[in-house]
Length: 400
Length: 103
Image 1 (cartoon, rainbow over the protein chains, first blue to last red):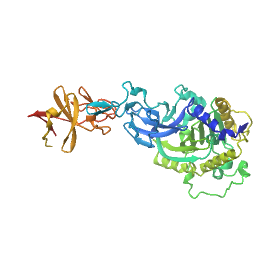
Image 2 (cartoon, rainbow over the protein chains, first blue to last red):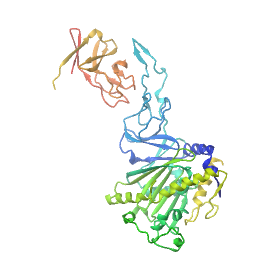
Image 3 (spheres, one colour):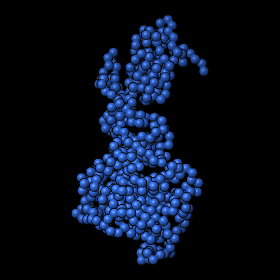
Image 4 (cartoon, each protein chain N blue to C red):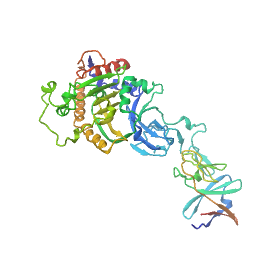
């Protein structure tokens, strides 16, 4: 399979991707319920390039509204998190409830002066017709998704049974606890992030750290699975014993003599809910990656802001019933990830350098033929089947 | 706490079926004239810090000009969104042609 480089550099293609993947027909990640635990709590986030607000209304229900005032179109909410009784655009103080309904319009009935009333909105102005744009919301075991498309299929169907099984393995209904965030802006096309986590070829080669300390090896027991459309995927792997093995013997970066100064970092404790796999990386198309790498669990939110750039927001979490030791362990292991993570710093860089290559040679074709030219479930890591699957789906939706 | 009656304005200053603002001890008070009776409340809305005397009186309900929050001025009760807090009201008496409120 050859992939046109223009896929990553063309403005027209990028606009169409926003419309067809982020703004219609798909569920996009917005956050975790645990981020807005109390009535009045809100979080500002993004779907594609559109700013949205996730709120918890007074009745405890979660809502997602577009962060654009119905009046003069201003992106009014500037706080990332907060607790408010209502939403107010500062420009003219249009006032909305936490569900996005328009409640108050300043001087709607005009201003009294010398016994007469001046101005105001026309008598037939109906506030109920001028609320914020309300998105469709789906919540599964504490994870909140939203869609601008009210005709979108149910979330469970969108994910499909295969992916849903891995989703529910991690999000099994236990209450989540937010541990913290990493944020970075990566100067590359947003699809490169999806590809990166659909690419089991690179971890053992790019991430020398993984190989050196035995967290990932190409001969790990592994499985690659997709939904029926090939848009979502799960890379499932079970860690090998560590140390030198035949497969990695030829990799020059493998340095057996290297030791960690503080090896509490690799103090992995097997958790019952794993049911075997030590790492499951889920790519939910188009907006999020859900990670379990041993004891470190997180969501990684992809927020494109141009054909050649996206914001990448990592939410590290644990579970309310974690012991303090487990929380500490999850936090320590989170040092692998994020913009400066021992492993993930590499991904940010290669995505940037890929984009540089594409901009230089926009007529080029890249190759994704490892493991064959078709797409399907696979029980090893030496394949680019998931990348082919994603582009198979991409071409159908994009009509390219 | 000691309560005292404060003398405000001649009762003829209070408009009929409307509202005016007066000052009492550096504090703005809204006076409403409804069916020959006088009612008093704080003049500043509990929501958006707007002056209720610029609002619209409809029976015993005052509507804030800013965000259309409504209070019943007999009890101060907040009647609708976006209000979350009631309004303070004051006992009123009229003596020798003047309006008094008890604070």
